[in-house]
Image (cartoon, rainbow, N blue to C red; front, side, top):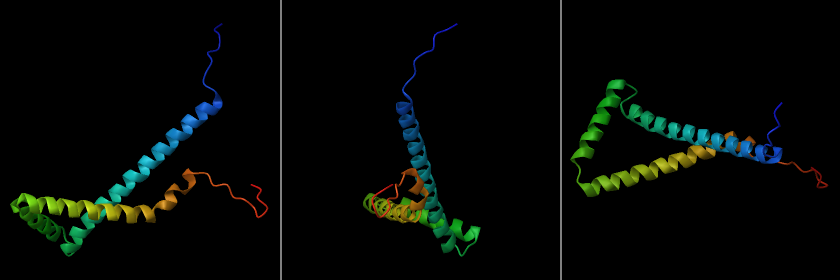
Length: 116
């Protein structure tokens, strides 16, 4: 017979599990939101190419050629504009997807007399 090994208290273990769950849930939500922003950029170039693969690739090629030919100041300005636009898109996507995080945080509903 072996003696039982004392383990962490159930409350501490539960908090650790809840923290891991919340972190994984937030990481998944963020990864999905970033993927949606990337898909929106792809959709933008597909729209520029009149919803054809050849048109989208031609616009990307034109875009890449102009980026490579630009001087460093213009490249830095473009990169700043790109990241600002991507951040704004991420904020918009985050607001539209906020419902996916609603059940992450428990909400106690109180009645009019203050009881839970």
